[in-house]
Amino acid sequence: MSNSTNGKFLRGIMLSSPVLVIAAVSIIFSVSVALEGKIDSSPTGSTSNNTQQVDNNEPADNTPSGEPIIILVAAETLYSQFISPGEINPEQYYTNKTIKVRGKIADFVYGSAPNSCWISLKTDLDNGANIICYFGNYVIKPGADIEIGMEIAITGTCMGMTNGKITFVGSSTEDIEFIPYDQNIEA
Image 1 (cartoon, rainbow, N blue to C red):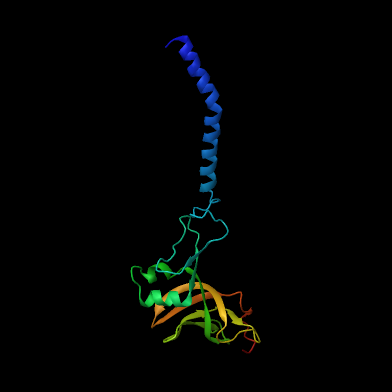
Image 2: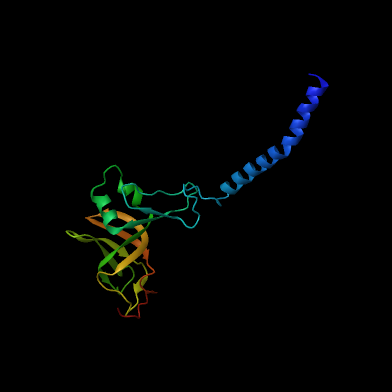
């Protein structure tokens, strides 16, 4: 190589090296932030919360980092996926996962002992209410605003289906006021 060609080559590298350094730093920073879990890998780029809505036969799963996704699903959809699984295994996708189920109240009991307070949700017109949500050591506050047919969202751990009923434990809702169970309170 001649001195003239060698000089042009070196000048070209010198002029492009700041761009290469900036690109390398950007890539390293992006990877480190992603590994810290600060970037959501969702296709929409949304980082607002850890929820995923299920309204078809493709149930959600947990994130790779192990953080549970709260699966949003209508009572009717959840029940239909358990009775007609299709390509999915609802026991595998829903059991022991945090689910937020939305539906209409079919029945409820204020409860007078731990784990005796429950709300059932309508699942279809023929079979009535097949999702039962238990509230652990919490009971519906006497006089709370609750009525049959009221639309409600309940979050809990799905325990799967037994005898035609889908059971949720450790349930909670922001739609109705609850109080801790107290043996001195009558329901």
